[in-house]
Image (cartoon, rainbow, N blue to C red; front, side, top):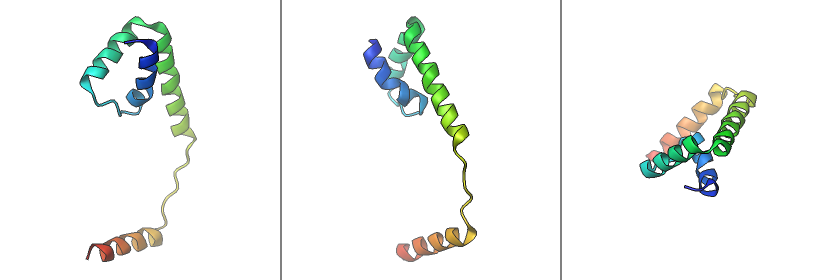
Amino acid sequence: MTCVRAEKYLVALVDGELHSTWRKRALCRHLHQCAACRQSLLVQLRIKSMLHASIQREKVPATLQYAIQKRLAEEMN
């Protein structure tokens, strides 16, 4: 695997979206051999971590949650 191709798959790997076993193995072999791509992987992991840390989750008001559930139930019938 080349660095260009590895870069394509790093974000998918970090996001848990790299489903192909063959690609995972090839990427892991490449990362084992390539310091630049390992560094790139660390950057992607840091970015994801920073994004998760900076997002403030808002609790959905109970009335909105109830209204959505009620509407979905109506549409299902």
